[in-house]
Image (cartoon, rainbow, N blue to C red; front, top):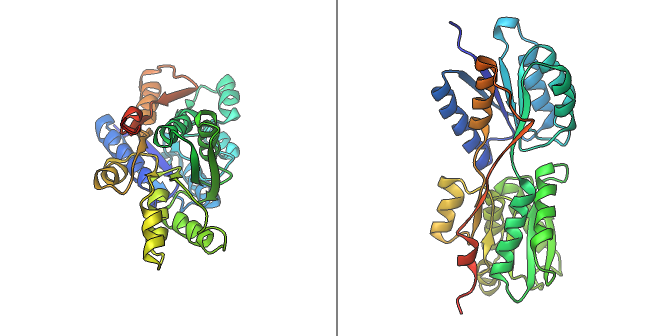
Length: 301
């Protein structure tokens, strides 16, 4: 009997959370008895669209039974999703909501759903971490993901909902990678006004960018200035055991937020539908948690 084949389409190999997504997919494939082909799009939406369409348009016996997809761009590829569903290929969208999911579910028996963490709540946790570390208020340097990313926008929204009004935010943009944050902070430090600004904390929307920011400050030639920046608390997000959580233990990060990988859950849901015809919700959520717990971040009295 032919093993079911799943295509796992991820954003980039230069991000620890994406690598954790891939690892979770490999474990799930072994557990579920399916084949998983993992492709990375190099943070390029056109490449990702081309890769997925090539799989959909392959000969019938070469096509995947389902596609698990974490989008690079802002659209979540509705036309590509339509092509997959039309060809009877299941579709699981990761870390994004898309109106087309609800529309396609009305008319198609092919499984289509989303799996995500509540990204607004992830942002709220970040805001509560900042409040715990800065009980008297202050200023933070906030490093976001791309502007076209729902995850970035939702995390920012949640952060502003929960942070106190006496914490002021200066924003830089990254691309979810360590190197992108290093370049953004290095460019920012090149402005005549930046190095004179007093910041109390550095918050990045993922752990890789938090470390990229540290690397930029580490390169400041002036020792006093360099140590002033490196003495700040650095906060990230994703909490992958080998990176984010390890960086907390080593003191490089003060806190992170653990976002469980969701490729495995998506694959389990697809198998339940494809093999046992079990209905699935339009969107399922995993739970994010602060490490260390927020209460432990408050200054001791």
